[in-house]
Length: 265
Length: 248
Image 1 (cartoon, rainbow over the protein chains, first blue to last red):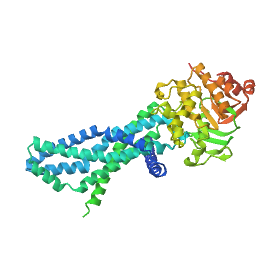
Image 2: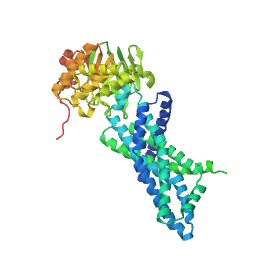
Image 3: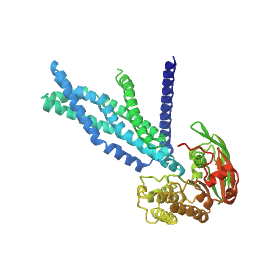
Image 4: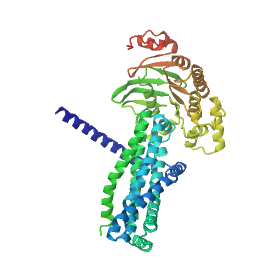
């Protein structure tokens, strides 16, 4: 009985902690949106962050997109060949890349690369009193530190996702047509015929929402880092893990919602 | 100039300040001493608006600061400078950009004016020629002096020093103490210095306040503090650890 009560107590604490963290993330998101309109936008900071997030992430995102498209095209070819459905490989790869693989994998990588960097940088500033120094100099930290990072990520993530899609579909074509000998004309014709503009919209909407999640969680973790250098490591790990899990869970609900909204007829 | 009335604050469920009352006059230098964890730095953060007290009020130049919004606080933050314990220089900016930061934030765009003011502030703290250095390239004492230059560049009326000599060798600590005195005279600023260092407290303080169990337990001139026969104050001032269990 005692152990059951202990376990229930632990679960209760976990639940209330999770609710508190989620509340903190939403409050920070609200404050970030409010600060966007209340203060002047710091273009220099935002462009610097866009360079770090957008340009410096290209290699990892393009490589992921390319090899995801290649592997998926190969797997689909192995299965579809048995039924003589090679001409359906193109649209299958393209739709899977647009609706799921492109935005999810691209944003998981961004959660790892950019989310970790944001959380580590902000938490280092927090523990070395630089965030307090900003406030002491009359600058609101959300406006100076978070808004540029938030905007840079929500602008860059859909662009990077679009690049990953193009690369994945292109490399998928190369693998199916040049390596496995699928007819190129049929491949493209079916890809264009069955890939809807709405599929691309799903990719861009998902990546936008994922970017909001990554930026909010990483910045919240960074700004609430416990004191000490151990806190920076813990904060960074938690930011990546929480952002990745939140992204995967939200992806399920987004998939259901977007399909209901865009394909209701 | 500044008045604290019944300030109370808890941290992590533990009451740290339990009704602090303190008045500071124009150009007065008050040193707050007390044992580690007694709430000295918390008090400075409340004065600067970085923490909100659970009870009590802060008045600055007759205006009640407690309860002001972040935006409403900012005009007063221009009049109050703070030197943080770890200097808190922005490590992604050069010394020049660190010093120019508050000026730029207050609307100064002219690069010639910025350079002139930064050069002057660095000269005051004897750091001329370090404009292009990054904070990581500076020693502990140089960081504190650069942070001090950043804090005074907008000519505040009140300066808060959070343990300005902690972690510095005695010679550098002495130079910081002299700098605090020099700045007070030159700029006519009032100062609150939080420290454990009694040499520093005697040197820079017009008045010394001893914070104990969340309240100002004793205050007086450095001479009065030295002559105080209260065992708590006497032990702290003389650095005696009598009555504290030492295991080992």
